[in-house]
Length: 139
Image (spheres, rainbow, N blue to C red):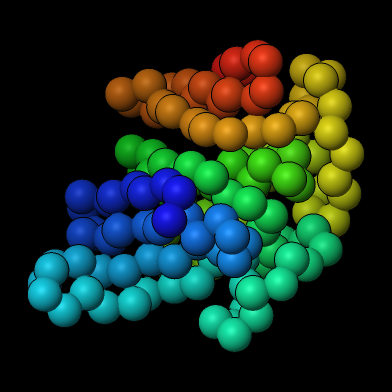
């Protein structure tokens, strides 16, 4: 496990399982018996291979965050993008860094990403900062 995020409002713990190209979420209301909720980046647990980029795949997610609206944000390093998942969904509704879900070209242009690693938000979610190789971008 590389990264963790916790949504206090829903008692949801998110885990980056980078070597298997996925994120898992669990309800941890009862710490002795956490309940699995969702799988992100894969369609089933047995698939641990790297897949081509799409709206439902990931490649080496390292960190993740939950914003003040309950959205899950995942920088996907090897696909050069950041994905936003709305609460309760394992399908992203927004992509930063690439023009679509199947394209992946690293670039240092202002609307592209070369290797997003982490994301943080201001306290009221009015801005996000993404670490991207040798630079930090504000969205």
